[in-house]
Length: 276
Image (cartoon, rainbow, N blue to C red; front, side, top):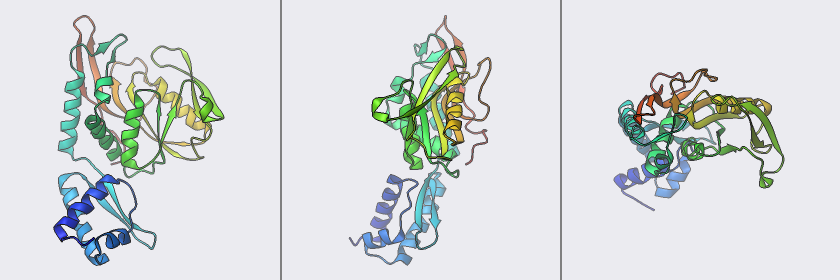
């Protein structure tokens, strides 16, 4: 399909952004648009410059016969600040508070636009790290995990409380819940992870970090590596944090059960040590 350059630039940009973190050979674009590879390379240079200027990511060139280009998602500081500010304001809505200091988040996690933004934010902080799998625990972490995995172009692995017949042989561990101090169980299919897989753990809410710590221990049984830990919301006033290194988008800073008042601040997204 022969297109004018302006049309080609729009179509290429759309294709790249629809296939994040996916290696695409130059020959694909060359055949698609019936254009020389030199022309395609110039177009990609323009797209790369524009994406970086707008804080939307970059184009990575992989040399060699098996190489090509990848769109690496990114979020500019200004846009990231806007997204997290909007999330904090939504979280502070009266009536969202649940017993135990938890927040009702089902309505927020059910909105595709918000989930997409959350996925881009988290993925942008781990885009330069080797990530093979995104892991979460059922249930509310699942949509966040898929949103992140889409931008990293990796599969999602779901840790469950009980084994399922459809998942075959499983490995289970007992762990101590950080908030309730109860012994609980988590289960993962033995086919879920290859040895030495680099795993990004994602969850919706972290209080003391017992569940996340349980997933870390589970990964040790699989001889897998923790590449990072990211949560949507962390509780600031946790008595004993079981996890040290993590990324958070929001922080539950103050709760007044009597007045139904919630204060949510920005998390450590702009200050954490995760790779950018």
